Length: 435
Image 1 (tube, one colour):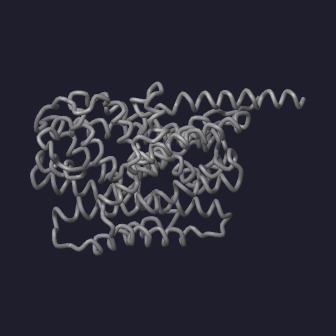
Image 2: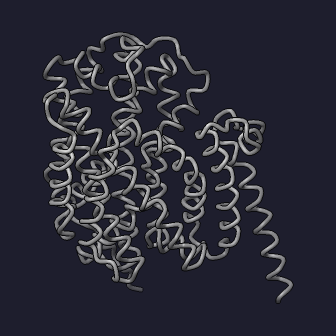
């Protein structure tokens, strides 16, 4: 019997795409949240970094794995689960979150944390204009996006990160202090929500599948195999980077107990390398944010073109996303972060349910249970959303706090699993009675 061999991308192509995906994920959140997490967790920094990696790195790998198992993008998986209309609505939500929240966030962060420290006289609109012109240039031609990100931006970004990290690990400015939080694992997970990387991976999974099509990798098992390799590589890079940045926050960051979010990262870089550190950090910030912006614009172009069966064109979406990012970026970084978090905690639990369920190869057999699980997870996410809007003692959040793992911020897990099991049993009984 003849066994078909897998068609694997050349090593150079895997390196380029993995580098492109790392630089696409490694945005402003991965630069500002790990140091803050490290400073607040102090001597418990490693536990906090594990919590961060669970959501930010393992979550990324599992999302890519889910797309590989189903050989579909988020649109395909959600439509299979929720039906065509609700699936597309559900898919559109995280895509629109990335456009309306993440694009202006990375652009504003570039201005406030990369441009202003070196060139304080540059107006915000000038920085945003230049940023989105470059992002548009990278994303506009779909066939060359990965090459531009993986061959040019990613290597320079990684080089600057290595310089800063090596200096901080070898000669830290201080030592970790006593933790200010008694739940470092929970804090790590909550901080990782802010990066949106697990959600982005579920979106980027379809983007990579489209890239594999462009490179003539069209068979299902071949696409899955290559996507798995790329997903693992990306997750490992993110895990290493976030762990050392949490450590830098715990050690060097302890000298700056009053530094605000974002400012702490700048203080650490400047403290470690002086003016060179400031320039190094500015380069890391600008390159990571530019990569993220171009990747989001390109992904959104692919996704909306797929969702509308080609009625919305890739280039139209890229242009629209750039304009939206520019306009909303004028709001400023702190305001954007404030409005982003509630929407992330709303949708993240249901996304996790969908990711983990999609890992099951016989996904069709549990489709109704997955729908129930996603609804339950959305309800719990809504409680967390209300908490961020000032309703901290709402009925849902109080219930979550009383459940197992509630103190770790994941009290929704057991009731969601329980309801999915009940739904699956009921579905099985109904099917047997029909027979």
